[in-house]
Structure formats: C-alpha cells, structure tokens
Image 1 (cartoon, rainbow, N blue to C red):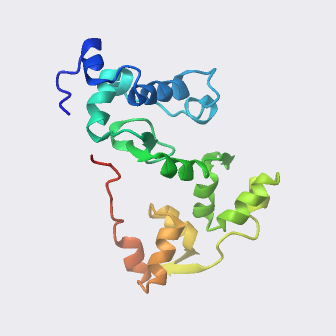
Image 2: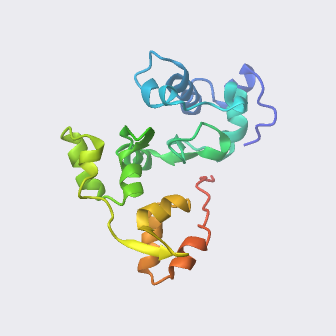
Image 3: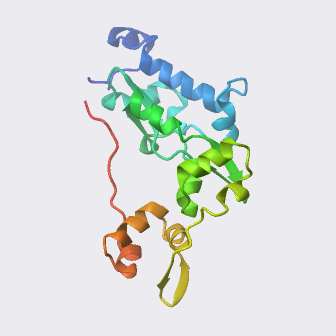
Length: 203
C-alpha cells in the first residue's frame, strides 16, 4: 500500500482508515500517555512513557507503522520502559500481546521501576514464586529473599553473582546463565555481543 500521498481526511477515507483499528490504536496510545483520566495512564504517561515527536500527528504515525500493519494486529513496544517510537514499536497478534501483559505488573524497588519478570531476571529469582509472593502482599525485598541467585563467577579477578555480571554487561540473568550452561567460558559469555533480531512483522 502506497502511503506517500496520505496527507488528509479524504485520503484516509479512500484507504479505509477512518475509524479503523489502526486509527484506534493511535488514539489509544495517546490516551494512555497523555490523558490522566485514562485508567492506563498510571502505567504509561504516569511512568514517564512518552510519544515521539514524529507521532504527534496521525500522519506521522501512519508513515512509520502502516507499511507493517495488517488487520488483527495490535501495537506493542519492544522495550516496556521505552517510549512510543518507530524503533521501539511493532505490530503483534493479540495472543502475543496478552502473554506480554501477564508480566506487566510494575513495582518499584531501590528507586527502579520494572515489571515483575524484569526484576526476577535481574536478581536471578524464580519468577513464578516471586510473582506469587508479591500477589500475596509481600514487599519486594522480602519477596526476593531466598530467591536470589547465589552462584558466583570470576572475571578479571573480580567475583560477582551471575545476575550482577549480567546487569553490568547489559544482558539479562537468563541470557548469561544460558551461555554458561552451554559451556562457554566466562570471558566469551561476557564479551560476545548479543544477537539483535528484528521484531517487525511484514505483510
């Protein structure tokens, strides 16, 4: 679909975009980030999630996101703490989005706000047990007690837990742990860059 000439309401109508799901996705995004009356504002705009300048208009949003859109897909951010912009957004099916939302329970600990799954990964904790404790009303520090990764490794003469090295080198606990379980040396596991994968869905 050619969107080079999509610049006014008549063009939207001709393309069938007026009151369409993609238009609704755009305005739902704006509501979450900009409207304090929205039930979702606390987890979006209230946490500092912003919308990029290019998406201040529906035209700008269409230019970036229409080429990869198809009916039935919903807008998703790749990094849950990142803003709404072309590089951090993609279209996913509703099942994938629902699975992601199951972990989107945000909590704050030591001045850092993350999802439960992100905290579990950061501290090397069993996610299901950690989630169960939080749902039972435990505070974060107590919920993590006894769940933290105790295994230590040595690199360049420094001894730290797997979780601590993972955080320092910009990866999750599970990514580093998986490399070590494959038999990689500590040096290779920490030094080799992570692979990057495109999550865009092309139609």
